[in-house]
Image (tube, rainbow, N blue to C red; front, side, top):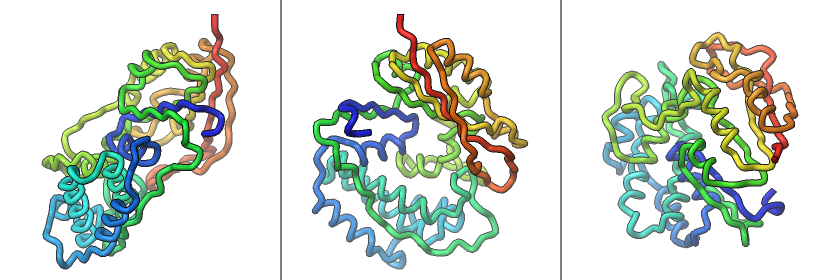
Length: 292
């Protein structure tokens, strides 16, 4: 894929996604030796020598073990204090490494809508570095955005546009609030059993007029091909998991843009244990856009 094109545009609404994309695909130089020094420091942390912090006070014994939470909070605060030493790429590489590391030990079912209650959360945090993409990236222009896709679409042109919007009422910023909270590091007051902060960064695609927003986006795109991924969880028994856009509605919008082919394959649905989804399908729409 990287060999076929020279320009790439990546866009996502989450703060954590912007950090991760910049870490993997950013163009700014980063120092391996500097990264290695921080890696050694964070890998050898002993929780016995660490004070309580924002993460351990709020998430310790819940989303993470108390000792793991102390390490996570210490690393995040240390990175914040190191902004004058690290350039933005180095900071994002280390912060992304922290995200991937604590996600592997989180006491959740794969997202952060809630933690698993009644479980003895064991210490298992291990700080590991991500590997930024460096192969086949020479002479490539990769632009990274964190914007409303509908607004960004008005300003760009592309050969191929891939879209993977949310479909249910579950807001990604709320589903992954712990990650977003640690990334932003504004230390807000948290509420409720799930320990969420005040709602922000909410997507219109999770609301009743999702199909209207989708239509606006598709009609605004200046692209030769449009690829849209989708799954059929709209038959879910969970109200929050029901799709806001139906397959036939998406197809109708895309058909007006050009010749659309639909590909389907059986796929095991993500399941938090409360909803059984039979005949789950992953679906891919590919539209060859009509011009003129």
